[in-house]
Image (cartoon, rainbow, N blue to C red; front, side, top):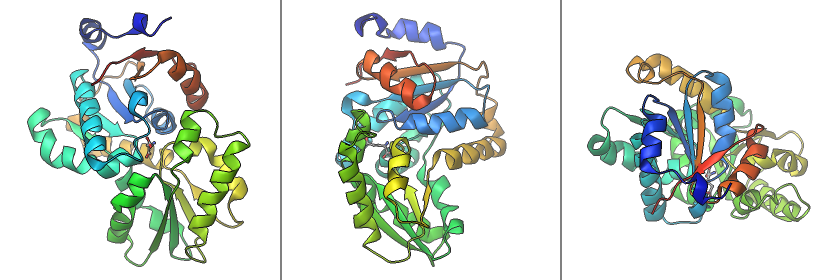
Length: 291
Ligand code: DGL
């Protein structure tokens, strides 16, 4: 089916989603699927609407202004489809756009709705896993430059040292499906070596980009022995389940038909081919044009 034939007209979307109030899950591309999979496992039965902004990915090397503008546009669209709650399953968007959306935009665009990120759930527990008190963060350039992990971990675990390394080639490798090939070895080893050479004794390394779990086997292969590699999907899923328990005013607005819809701002054919591999199940997406 061509991209055009699967293009979602506003009327179609309205009819399709009229009685649905899904949990919105957003990422710049495929990475959020690693979070979605864990969330669906922890919270089956709810309706989900996934949006990957593949046309403008990667976000990691873009300015604050661009990441904020793109993310806000996607958040507004997900609200328009009836999502009372959105998870930004993207560290770069969580680092560069979430706070402004929560503190400035939400009150104007949808005061009763909520937008959550992936950084807070991770930083409030990660300090419990290190024995040496030294944590490594592998992330996009944007996430590293924002300093969000260092700032947030310090709030919860002031005694823990945080060492960060940007890996700007890793997301393009994943987005182009080259992350498991031999060409990826050089860049994976380079990122790990640069991180580990910053400090001796790092014993926990967090994959602070939702794309990176897709190459976890390769990352583990090049990681020094004894270093634990952590991913976020499960942490975010547990935190979201807890959030819904604590916020019945949001939970009661979510519909539970077990529906799952995927949208991409780029080619549906490409999305379906990649996403099915990353999500572990067949995916059939619709095209969304966002400007
Ligand atoms: N997967 C996203 C993250 O967690 C963004 C990657 C990108 O678009 O650069 O940071």
